[in-house]
Amino acid sequence: MSDFFSTLFSSLWSIFMIVLFFGGSIFVHELGHFLAARRRGVKVSRFSIGFGPAIWSHTAKDGVEYRLSWIPIGGYVALPQLADMAAIEGESEDVAKLPPIAYSTRMTVLAAGAFFNVLFAFTLATVLWISGRPESENVTSTRIGFVADKIALLDGKVVESPAKAAGLQEGDLITAIDSTAVRSWIDILNAIVLSTVVDSKGERVAVFTVVRDGKQIDFTVYPRRTSEENIRKVGIDSAFELIIGQVAPGSPAEKTGFKAEDRVIALDGKPVLSWSAFFTRLQAAAGEGCKVTVTRQGAPTEVIVPLVSKNRMIPIQGVELKTNWRLLYQTPFEQITQILNNSVRTLKALILPQGDVGLSNVRGFVGITQGFWDALNSEYPTHFVIWFAVMINVSLAFFNLLPIPVLDGGHMLFATIGKLRGRSLPFNFIAVTQSVFVVLLLSMMLYVTVFGDIRRIIREHRADAQEKAATTKPAEAGK
Image 1 (cartoon, rainbow, N blue to C red):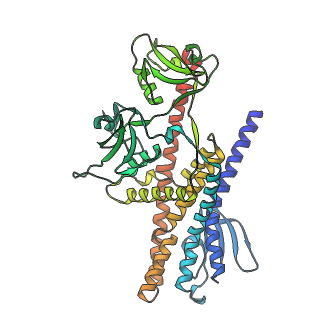
Image 2 (image 1 turned 30 degrees about the vertical axis):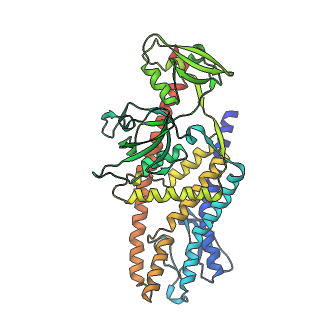
Image 3 (image 1 turned 60 degrees about the vertical axis):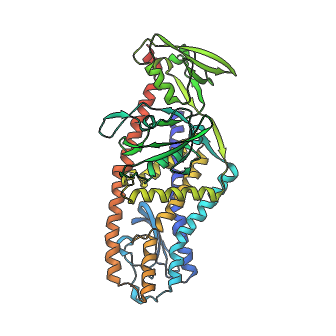
């Protein structure tokens, strides 16, 4: 019963934190519009968190309706003098009866939402700058710890991995990809997935600059589309210290001789730099046993792993793996710049023909909620939730300033065109354009949710279940 209440409390707390940070990000954005509008004397008819019918509403003495709505995919401040958004905001006032507003006021009010998001992100990023942001060694590393022999393509065909074909080796230190410096494994993955570089034949290519034996060498790698997510990979994994966190009592791993805090350094005398390399070599090992060298309390120790079953993983089942962590101290400017750069690269990869990113790779409302949930259930929940909130706020600001009708950037575009031509764009033109883009935007969000977020969550759930079955059910497998 105590476990039930503990789980219930944990779930409720996670939901509260998601509402606080995700809902707070939307609130901050709309608050920016609201305060700027009130400051500049612009009519505000409604302040709503969410779209659709109201769950709760209250009309203040100043005539502003404050509302919490049923569809939690954003929010809005109804500003009829700036734009008639009755299509998604509900009934609006007669714009003709309201006085016109200056171009500078329009731009100030429209940009205020993004500005407040960046300001909020800067505040949260300052907290991480002071406290430090935890990052695991497998993320901070830029050294190759595993090069796959083969990879499976989208059609199921198994081919030689691009990394092996190019000549990359375990132990290579990656310093740059396509002449852009990389400082973490995330940078490496982003460089592979988000790149829009092609060769003279139009094929996606990535030039890896690595340091090997003290010499700098360039390797031309051709990433291939793999997995259900249809993203490019080259068949490498990062290098990091292999640490066994816990060993389940009575498990095959305990019987084999592994102990908590063992550091795995070699298999049959050959160094291993990642768990991917260790598992691959163990599965391919021949004979009746193999020798695993570990560092135990600072001294090298050998553990003989029996290979009496076709499933070579059985003798090590029951181990809990972990990695080293460090605190990364980045200034708020560095954090925000990093997120903005990734946002720009993602947009380029999404819209350019040579890019590989599709709408199914983009996170929607469900994906963002899942991201917060994962952060809350990580080893450092507070830090990761704050970092995720920083990313969401910067991304929200960037997205809203894109010159797309319905978004703030679209309104700014219409206002600027009207300013340049000396008179506002026709009301009917703006109304029809925004109605069309409302449909397109909602359709895109539905597509992202169904074919992106939900499918991704299902795949991750299956992968987690398979991993759990392989490593946390040792007793049954060993019988």
